[in-house]
Length: 239
Image 1 (cartoon, rainbow, N blue to C red):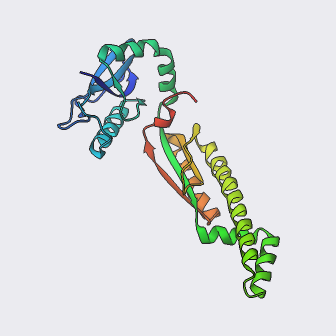
Image 2 (image 1 turned 135 degrees about the vertical axis):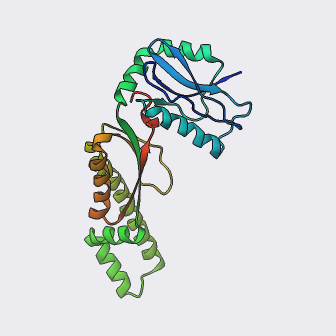
Image 3 (image 1 turned 90 degrees about the horizontal axis):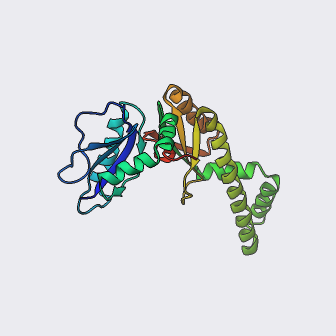
């Protein structure tokens, strides 16, 4: 039977006595040890799909294991042919895995996504550009302006908003990075002007969250959402 992998820890790390993994019924989690490393594994279900129950079970295994020390969390769906293959991979990459584990000691991931308050950012963009204000006022004085004038005005506003999105994405990263040990940019997605993950030392967590709150307080056209603490999935590999 194939082996499902949840994460990697130090072999010396104390692990919970009994953890239930993915599957229905839940499969028992065990450890595969090789040298100074251990992998948290279970048998792999015959049919592996990203069901909510199994996604939560995978996350729960990693979080429970983190109680004893750092864990290199694997993304959901990592399957190896057998325990021996897992052990061989641990041996092959022992030094790099140990380096990453050291980098994750006492640290969690926070994912930060940001978007614009639409009305507030339009007001901010117009207020910052005298030429746009003048054009807008001239159109209003002329009863709204011609169709062509409206199209051109809309294009100019869209460009200004796009430029503000880029500037605000940089602003968010610059404001939060000093309170984190590392940062990784996530994939671009519709609706978000920023999607970043930050590796935050637990002793600095309140400073980081205070910086997140300050972003909205100081820039009311921004909507900033921080999710965490999370297992450091984005930082399991060296940057």
